[in-house]
Image 1 (tube, one colour):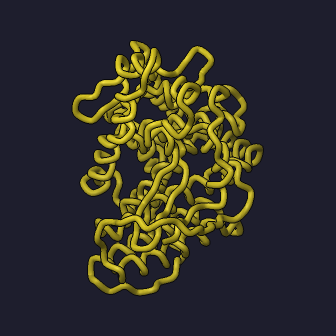
Image 2 (cartoon, one colour):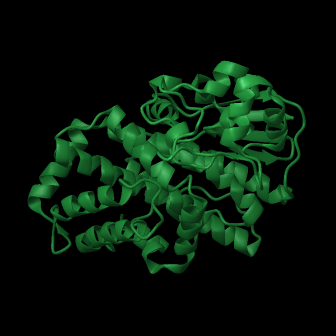
Image 3 (cartoon, rainbow, N blue to C red):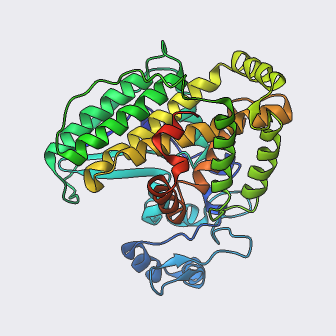
Length: 370
């Protein structure tokens, strides 16, 4: 069996106490796998007593978080007491894996690192080369059932999409717009059972796009995001503050001349922003697109990428408006927060995918206008 991963996967290493926002202090419930829980029950001595006091072994075993939402074994130096006292190999599975993610297919285990981690996000955003993967041999692991023909078709489609995203001769806006249309056509192929090897074509939407629709569309998306369950107390106020700031760039929904000039300055001065966004777009395609071979839905995965890129660029721009500067670390912090709120909330992801199907706001023709 092969493990397939992006080249940058090899670069990741937890920065431990150097992390400004440790995953051990994110307020997430940290489940403990059965094997590790069994071991924790048997650890002798004073530290074993602490383990049993700070772990709830009922239901799925998990650490009992402190009042401030921290893991009880995150010490004052920002390090893990379990790691210090028992060694890395005695961490529970989720602590060993995070922020790595995995997807299993027949003979292939795909993986990567998630944007919810600041170090992983820094590595992903700062990639300055075309996306490449590598493979290594690993022991066999099983997977859920899927149709091999659909898998092979979507594998080719994903490769085509990622290679197209890596084509810097086309503007990023055009690349994403054309990929969205390609995903729409691919979904029609899947629904009809005709798996055609179509090319990604240029979609001319200039005549259908009105500037009022652009402004109102983004504002409506942010309004929708504010209906989702927040993970952090700072998330909704952040969206509200930036939405107010964003609306100052529009007059009755139409982009003002001053705002148009500001956008041009932003684009020219911070051209690296589009590199960050391209790398994020590839991340979303790599991580989610092939899940379509299990549920038959690829269009929603590309909508997730499209909406995420639009929202993140908006957040980058608003940060620049507010602070008159935006750098890599600023963007990493914004992306990490977005990922925590969206990707790492199962309820929010379900709500978003439902909205992609149910709300006119997320119809392809409306997203093309963004």
